[in-house]
Image (cartoon, rainbow over all chains, first blue to last red; front, side, top):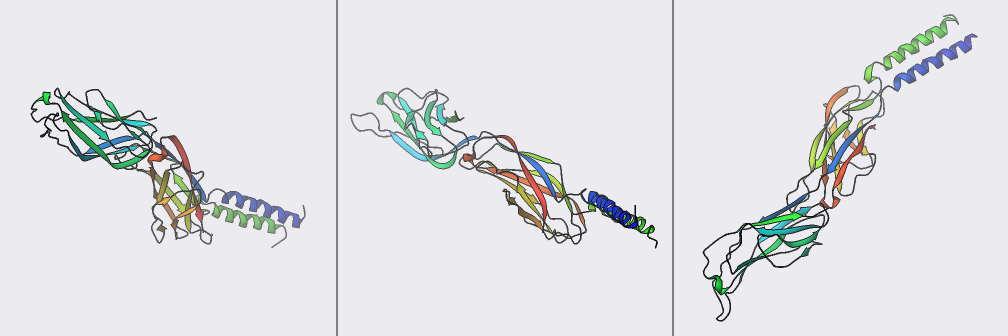
Length: 164
Length: 156
């Protein structure tokens, strides 16, 4: 090997070593971030309505009364959820408490439905939304046969179910 | 110097340079993150009438070194692929000490965005905090566990 070739070989070898040393660090770094969204179904009701029947038209049953002071709200990230409602114990004979929930966007309200110990559907087809300030209208009715009913209260249990 | 001695001198000199540049992690500009995986960030609650509540988590730390005279002074972040519709992953890199500036929370996309800038050179900043937050709208629906790859890169 002559002198010129020897110099070139030495330079090539050394540059190769420098190159290897330089590749030991990186100008980028990656990180894997794990994400997930679980099923979410939340409803809330505000207000404590009070309804009292006090009048009647002569010849007719006592006049029903309404209360629309309550509101409800819903958040679901599922499809086709529905709202049902029930009361824990039956009302006195001849007394009827009904509720009508306004439907959120895309949902369908069943209108005013009498409440009992068996859950009834009030709103169906609730799909992937978050909406509040929705109307709740209670209606209290009584027949004359119900007589005078002392003040009583019922807790209405609302449930959101059925989404997929 | 004789002709025979020249190659030996050249090798010695260049090996010395190579040895110097390979001295530990500070040989070249570099960025590393630890750990390689973060999360899970799982959304599971909401206040009725409001969008699901976002969640946050530590993403561990990063270590950065910018070698003097190399064309870097900032860190960018990007996703390797878009997130599902209606979801947002936000990254926050704390600022290293010195004159470096954190951009604060940055919503990640597939385009590189600056998350830290004005990083001084020739100083190793170690174990600087990374934080993530994750949000989803109700319209995003339910998402099975999945991973998003975030790339941090040194940039001018």
